[in-house]
Image (cartoon, rainbow, N blue to C red; front, side, top):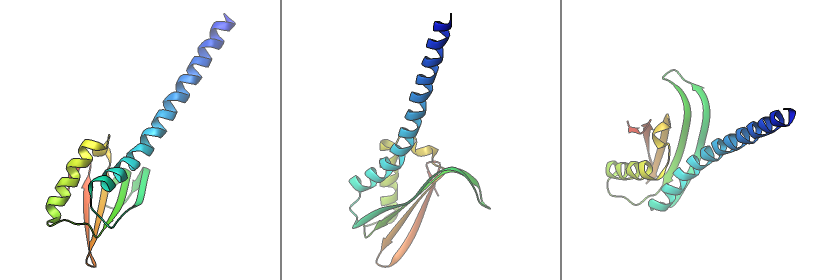
Length: 125
């Protein structure tokens, strides 16, 4: 009986460890997946990840649990609105859990002009 309890406890510990490891891996992969998707699909001089935060954040406007910010510098596009829609479509396809991100900010910098695009839970604002 003691041996059976020991095996059960060991199995639970291994299962919990594997589950925790898989959660950590998924979170790392989401921020990397966004950066990889942007880098692979955008013709920019520079793409930087400024912020990726998972946890409770409280501001006057909202409570968020996941926030990401990226800067895209001197990208080649003719129409920003079309480019945002194109990027949004790519992120929907390539980033698992993309629509779960409370706020994704993309800052486009071109010709000393800064344009901030905000996407909340997969919806472009």
